[in-house]
Length: 266
Image (cartoon, rainbow, N blue to C red):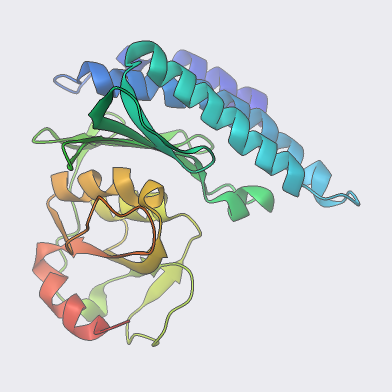
């Protein structure tokens, strides 16, 4: 499966993948290329996970190494294009550079537990924060070859197609998604997927109707923030100067008030 997926990625160059999108910025183009390069490592390594599940040592060290390798590739590619930008990444932490107004926010594998157990639901997440605002975001699922991206005032996209949040207006018709522990069980139909980045991408694409979770890190959700906004969704206020213990509620405008009332202090 890994070889087939790599061949698919080779044929889907940036220009082919986004040939119906009017234009993408130079920064987003760099993000796309970095994610595609790192994805090749993840696809190869994911193909080895099943073998490691039955070994005495287990796959944990292997997955940690995959995380580090993917992050290293992404950072190298971003630095080539924008050497002065600062960086916040899951593995390396905070790297302050000359340009403190622009910061890359990187999660090389969002959904590490899924990756660890051979479950094909994880993603590379890259965002650009400029002057305390997320202006570009990309979430790439390399196994399904699904790329979600958005730029400020440019709309949200899934590969070649413009995406928008769900239009449902009744909570009992909606499917929500969350993760981690829930303080109080909500009276909602919901799932847990194991990837905050993909949860938010799916809300932006209308696959889920809303997402709620607390105790998140900024690299889990940075790209998803602009995806949901540009897809016409609503989010609670998020302080981007804080990197950890973040609470988020995201949905369409049609159900946002109802969802907030239903969740309370979830």
